[in-house]
Length: 280
Image (cartoon, rainbow, N blue to C red; front, top):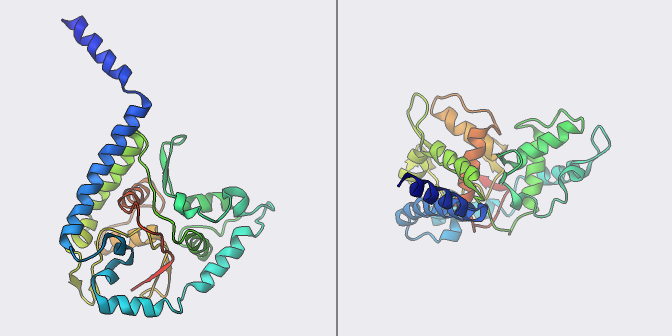
């Protein structure tokens, strides 16, 4: 009996080919994403799925009109122009960011992704900084003007393309599920999670602001926040949200925020990339 059980177990493991494991990981991620999306769709039945790229502006016609008016003369144009220059400008060793990462067109649409070599989620901002620093430039650090401008330029070069994130294996699924945990995890003295504001209370007012829905959050970054009068990368926005709960944020581009970005980007699959965009 024991030998038969052992044989059956070994046969099952043998049948669990990499392709089968990838299919299982992808199916699990998609099931969790569907449940996540369906919650928001039921909460806002009048909002078209494609319109979640507009965040809170999708919930109110007047707000959407204001958004459209701002974008007639967007405040981030100079940042895009600066980022374009920085992308091809020789760094200390004579090579450019383009030499390191390739052509700008469509690059943003390739991120984030799970790297099988490092077993970690790759984030575009982190790769930009790593390339710049490897080429001898120490000005490219989290939230620097240089990084923000380059991210704005790269986002603009992927506008109109769709978010297309995959969960290719079990290790990627673990990163995806860790990101999902971060979304629902309460932090800080206020004991709040991302889900408290953007899932359960989305659409409600917080002082003068409308809490945006959980879907579409990755498609429009980096965003020009009117409140900050400048560009804000997605990872910086994560840090701001955690700080608002009166907790110490995780390290920018560390595994916690990177996995959260990976999870939310998967949720946004199929949505059009619109960054950089304007947000209040």
